[in-house]
Length: 109
DNA sequence: AACATGACTTTCT
DNA sequence: TAGAAAGCCATGT
Image 1 (cartoon, protein in one colour):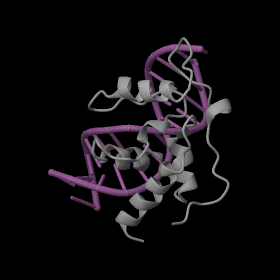
Image 2 (tube, helix red, strand yellow):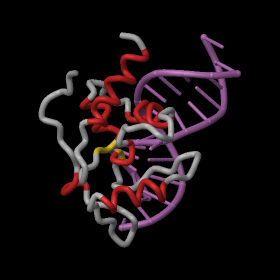
Image 3 (cartoon, protein in one colour):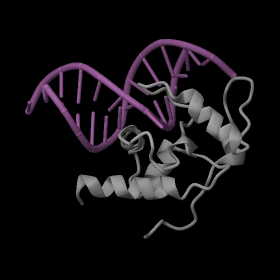
Image 4 (cartoon, rainbow, N blue to C red):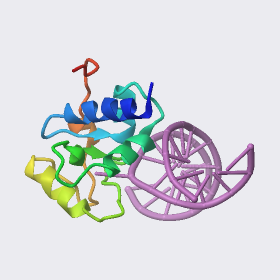
């Protein structure tokens, strides 16, 4: 397996997250068949162009919070999620038990 | 090969 | 519940 293949696997999983739902980095990695590669998911998303169609904003960390990036687009990410109906609580966190997306079958094609 | 870095997680206080 | 420390794994120097 080549490094670029893992990128594709991860992006396919992120593409499959429906609006109004989210997935943690670790969950995306596992769904892509790459357990323990949560940080790799972050790396892949970091390399995406700003105008990409990939719904990167639906990927959040295990705490239910938004991970801080180099270029602080965290506000944009939060706005997009709120627009999809995801409610952040007073501590800036959202309920993963309610809004986490659980892919039933591995994404192919 | 060794060391540092990062859109992460888990565990311990 | 929040914050610190340690673990993890791919990449780049």
